[in-house]
Image 1: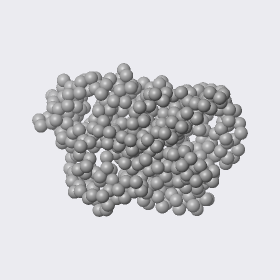
Image 2 (image 1 turned 90 degrees about the horizontal axis):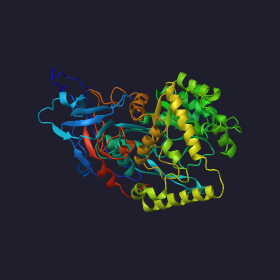
Image 3 (image 1 turned 30 degrees about the vertical axis):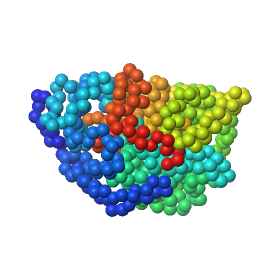
Image 4 (image 1 turned 120 degrees about the vertical axis):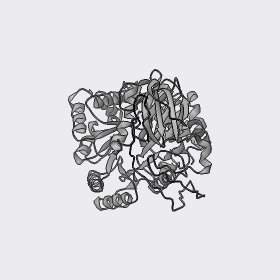
Length: 515
């Protein structure tokens, strides 16, 4: 691979060699791989990248071996200010050169894409994503039922610029692993998946597919079983008991994998002292400040508990102690502002949700409307709608956490009422990070290099620099001055292959929520 820069000789970057094999037909409950196609193995200077199956070829805008993206504004993912009029050379899936357009030589034979007035970001690293969609009241005893989205979710994530995703909790981990294999083998389009094992929950669980833990031995067996099969992390859920959480952390760490948690029965500080690696959602779900909190019990949400959170001073002793404990124990925080915004009765307005309507199946859209309407009726009946106040408190908490040096990562968590959709929710999360007070450069870093750092993949992905994998997002607009440009991805490059964002979305229109 050559470095193409005027005034200097080309230097060779030695890249690791990769080898991929396909030896089985993959099958999940809702997605079937019914054809075997030859997979080309790229060995040498570039990135190992199997040829996509024939059915996926129409979704690709460009897969030229060498591509020059010229005259773009670049956010490199480091958090540094944007760089204007840049040219990026992609050579066999790697970034071969990044520099000013007037000093970068376009190599002979390269496909030139003049993208003036457009923006390039690093491929986004979504750190709270799911391969399922929830159906409220869809299971026995009105438990929430999750439906695996093997067809729609991977394409919607990739279309939005998510080139790497952690599935932060799985209802069907075997299916998630099969989807990952299908993507890796070129049979499905989607981000690289870091698959999290089944939810580790307690007796009061409200998601029918959650795995209810029954003591330390059950925890150890569960962690061992799924870690042997390829999951890269585990997620503790709301009703897990303290002893079970401690056992999960110990067993996962023995396997050299991490544990995150959406907690309630266990408060944040208690989990930090056990050695947890990551906490989801933030202050909004931390039960330790609830006046009715009892050990090992998830307290019911009440106006009193909400008020207790709202009156907390982010600069006061309690929150400062929590932040310092998280940072000193190297505990990351995942921002999921988009999913909580969706619980506000008035945000977003129903008449602005055309994108959600066209993406969801008719049945899922109808269910979402029912829930949104019910929420509005309750609010008008006098129930306190404190969602936005809590959201602003969380934004303040996240700013302070980052200011003090905490590792903030991000994802959309496509759950809640059902209005947060894979990919589209991540775009909204980016907007909300900027609304929270982060600069566009900081928001991009939170959604790229920070996630790569947490996953231990910062040498391969997360920033747009020489030698790294060519995971890039080309936005049709000026993200620097209009953050809504994040909603206009045009081409998403993954390992140097440029996927057409609009075609990816169109290929699964009307399917989300069902498959």
